[in-house]
Amino acid sequence: MLYYALVFLVIAIVAGVLGFGGIAGAATGIAQILFYLFLILLVVSLVAGFIRRT
Image 1 (tube, rainbow, N blue to C red):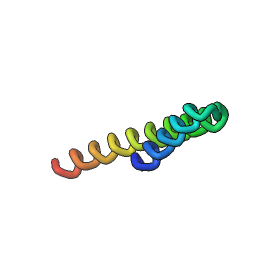
Image 2: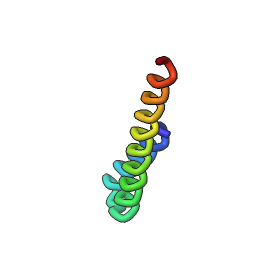
Image 3: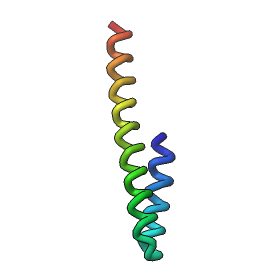
């Protein structure tokens, strides 16, 4: 999931440099959503791992 967030971030940067503002904005939004989803799943996984150990 983090891989896809980075891919969309690179797409947004390239589109921004080339002047495609709409595409860059959409790709940035998708990258942000995927990154936050990755962080939430990471925290849930860490908490589940700590609970399972005890």
